[in-house]
Amino acid sequence: MARIVFDLDGTLIDSAPDIQNIANTLMEEDGLAPFSLAQAHDFIGNGVAVFVQKMRAARNIPDSQQKDLLARFVARYHSATNLTEIYPGVCEALRELVAEGHVLGVCTNKPMEATQAVLNHLSLNIFFQTVIGGDSLPVSKPDPAPLDAAFDALGEGLMIYVGDSDVDAETASRANVPFILFTEGYRKVPVSALPHEKAFSSFDKLPSLVTALLAKET
Image 1 (cartoon, rainbow, N blue to C red):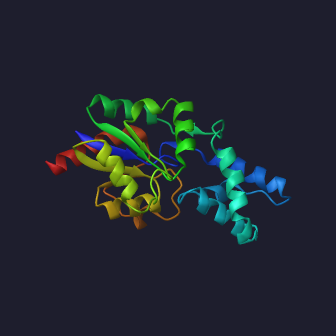
Image 2: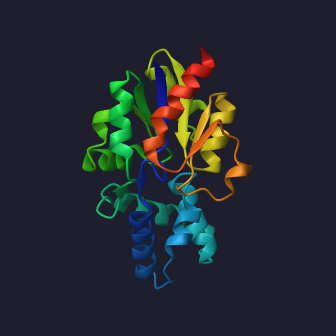
């Protein structure tokens, strides 16, 4: 049996269109140019405050507007679910992992309220025994504390972290746990540049990768 913790945005769900839509709504309100989906992908990973900082830098918005822009972003984030989709094969893979006796959790830099809203909206909440959001602790990824907290809540068993980005790879490394990389998410560097134990591009491959890691540890 393994404890398997997942990142959320770019790993289980493609939420970038919703996040882009929030950003562009704010830009439209302020008379500024919109962001492309590729730019939204690039801004995602280190939490909403950093996302807003990157927005400001791209549009030369002064530091003094960070607090206001962040508040306006967060106010919309909690209900931004309509454009978000689950990656193909996710539900089937999660169902298979649970049936095999593994326990699952989520560790994300997305704010907790927004995390719970999208998990509930997509009916993914049924798979996870613990959820750690970006504001659940005083620190967020790549600090390993949130990931450690998620594993602690899941009890005993081999620890595995599944994510899609450089932030996730660093978090796993700092927590000293095996990292399985989903290659089709929001990573900003080549796969070869990210330390990982296993990598996959389709979720139907994930259960067998978990089995292989378990066999390696026994």
